[in-house]
Length: 164
Image 1 (cartoon, rainbow, N blue to C red):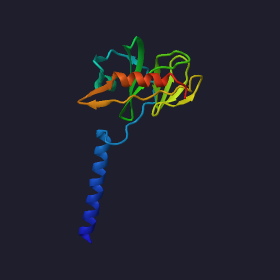
Image 2 (image 1 turned 120 degrees about the horizontal axis):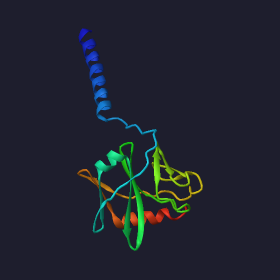
Image 3 (image 1 turned 30 degrees about the vertical axis):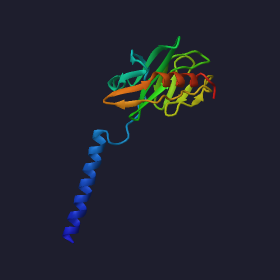
Image 4 (image 1 turned 135 degrees about the horizontal axis):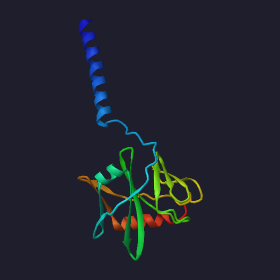
C-alpha cells in the first residue's frame, strides 16, 4: 500500500513538472495579442524567383508588410505570426485600394475602410470589401528564414483581386 502511494504521488509530481515546463517553454498554445499590431513595412531579399524574410523580423514586429516590383506591377504582402504559425497573405483591399492591415487578435482590419478578415483563413467578416478574401501564399521556413516563390506570391495576390 505504501509503495502504491509513493508511485501515485511520484506520477502526479512528474505530470505537474512536465506541464509547468511546457507552459514556461512555450510548449503549449501561444496567446494571441489582444492589442492591435499595425503593419511594419520592411525591405525583403529577392534573388531570382525566391523572396526571403528572416523569421526574426516577424518575431520582432509580429506583422510585417512588404512590396515587390515585378511583371510591370507593384504587389504588396503581409507576414504575421498567429499562434506561433507564420501566415503569408496578399496585402490588398481592392475596392478601397488599401495596402495595409492591422492585426488585432484573430482579425485583420483594413487600415483604410475597416473591413475585417479572419486572420486564420483570410475570409471576409464584415465591411465594404469583405468579398475579397486575403489569399494565403505557400512558404517554407528553413534555418530561421521564410522563403517564398515570387511567382506564387503574384498568383496569390491576383487571387485576392477577385471577389469570391
